[in-house]
Length: 370
Image (cartoon, rainbow, N blue to C red):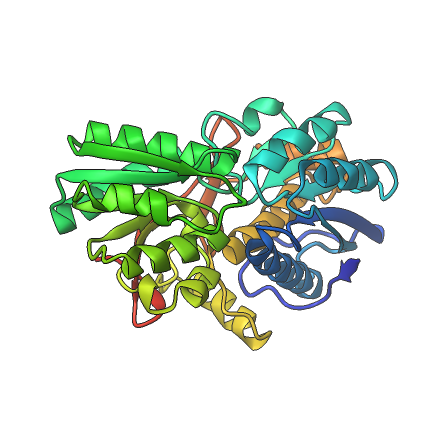
């Protein structure tokens, strides 16, 4: 499926350049449109489509049209590898955005590195991974190590918890990485961990684990899970009578979680790489444009949108050249780029650098915890 773009980018401050020869730059987008992570993929698809449309209509890349070639990774490492190979070798894309999960990125990104094709990770949050695959792999999404410690600290100061329990998915790189950071963050904050329970991504019944943790009477329950499991965990925890605060990892950062959990989502906390409440004009324009397309945006949509802005700025930085090595070279020059995530730059590690925040669910909506 292809999303060929054309609309205005109020969000991008790019410098004007002389007219260049007409060129179409193909950008691959690999997202989980089916499978366990499909809720994230739907947002990412919408964010990429909007950004490409705006950039093309803005005329800020004169002589260049961005063409998005969309593929579904199926939340499957093997399918992710297959679509990466197709985009690189058949579609001849200049760069790839995705895939959705860290587990898939660890499987597929080495194919891009081997073929010297730039990748922009827009939702891979495993610390000390992904960008270490090679110098063609760059990351927009903040890692769990960049978000969770500050989120735990803010929540602890607000709620005053002294003990905690943790529940996490132990068969997925995304959720395991979240657990590792949660555990170390609690320990560094002096919070006593009373118990730890695990589950697999195929599980839907968490009553045994939650009953065991509830019996320990923790002040707070931390959960690292994908959104489908996150919703069920919140519901089952409340059904079992757990009334304390729940704090989720990055997998909770989707409006799908609120839909799945319903009233049980109320009061749930989660660290976030996107401050939805920011009054920055770029962020407000992004939210309005997504809503105009019938999409209530979340962090995953904002990060995917930003991924396209970063590629466009790299092309500009490379002198309006859209080859693979041109874009890679341009990434190194991206600095303080206005995006819905805030002013965006790359760290020397090729990881993203921008502000983080903490969200709380209030009246069925994410709000920033003040």
